[in-house]
Image (cartoon, rainbow, N blue to C red; front, side, top):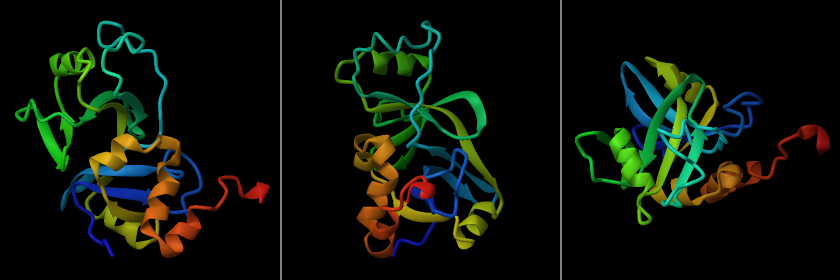
Length: 185
């Protein structure tokens, strides 16, 4: 059983989380240390109009681009999550072949490259103070699972929560079948 929260861990919201951005959320932990943690919600798609000088989402050469609601903190801040190791001085490796960071030039080159990296434009993030995430985990708010680039970039966002629980098997697989709206049961 995977039981340690660390950089590259996926947090999977338990059914106890009944509303808000963390309802059925999958969060990629990008940093976890004694001072606190931060991560990006990766299974909540966004459809935003962005300034064309930054990115014209309707005129992309790279078909591997998605937008995500990264979390409730600083939702006007954009972070890049991607599979490119071309700018190591600008990026943090989160897990195998998954990187966080990059400047505007990197973004524009990645978007205009037909063979460009998988990339998510994440708006906002999730943050926890010292010990807070561990308490939420111990109180039953999260299941944890190791991340992979394949899961991250090749699972449809709206199916990721249930898909990960099924992959975990046993009681988790059973939870994956709970209807979103229990009044419909």
